[in-house]
Image (cartoon, rainbow, N blue to C red; front, top):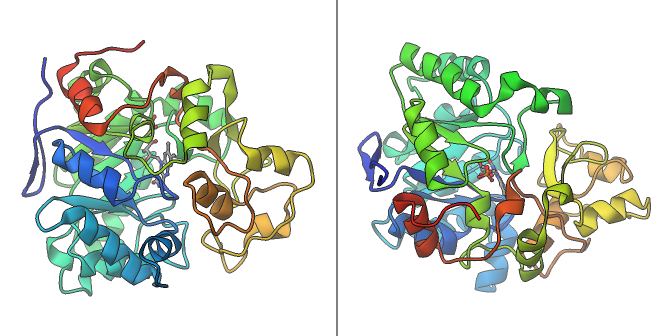
Length: 366
Ligand SMILES: Cc1cc2nc3c(=O)[nH]c(=O)nc-3n(C[C@H](O)[C@H](O)[C@H](O)COP(=O)(O)O)c2cc1C
């Protein structure tokens, strides 16, 4: 059965599918535009855009201009586009939001921390009122807190992405035990967040993490979600910005090749799902990693753990920039983040083919 269409406020999408923001450099304008043109909502990741856009255009731009330029390139006028801006990137957060608004971005998606200040920042920009705001959460409790705080700034979420423990990237729990606990199953989180949505105005709930097939999407729609967000499936497309080495490692990997890294881990302090063959992990484990850490996106309170404790934390700035083929990485070994079901990926397809498969259910899991 074909999937239903989907609405976020006054924005209509033929397919209830959001392509998750993937930083650094995996979801740029090329991928996001292809997804939106195929009927879903494509998302640009703001992470590292200053360097990536400067490299692309051959002129040095700051993060605000870079976000605006990348969104304009994806929108080309009317195509609806979202941007994912992580709270954990505290040095560039406000400027990224403002740059996205300069280019009249349609949707801002924000997680990896609590996006408490987002409505206030957005409220001070002339384009702010029109832009839809979507927090990412991993619990009903955190969502309730966000809703209460946003109400004080006169907004409620236009939708909410509920990300479960099978997702790629950073995971919203402190320990592996919590990630593996039955309580944190995505189905349960969706139920908890639906309850909060009913209390705060019935905004749509979007399920994310470990959703792979047309059947998986139906399962979450049947549970009451209005849409889904997928990362790993879009990582494995021709349009994604992942390097060829990253894409090859993704197609090659088996279940045993995927781990949730904590120690050594991400300097953001959250568990991070990666491929064990990531050169950055191997170098960190060898004890030979030299902390160059010259980018500073993941600073927390003015400090970066990857710089202070190079044997316990890897450099996600340079590692992820490298995995998107960025040439200016001073610390070159790549870091490959994937979702828990990455071993099911057996080929790289076009976004068009993937969207047809997901919407019409023509091909199923291998
Ligand atoms: C390569 C990669 C990079 C990611 N980067 C980000 C990011 O920068 N910000 C974010 O909020 N989520 C990020 N995610 C999470 C995705 O947006 C998405 O929610 C998640 O991967 C969904 O799970 P799935 O991969 O099983 O579909 C990333 C995921 C992957 C695979």
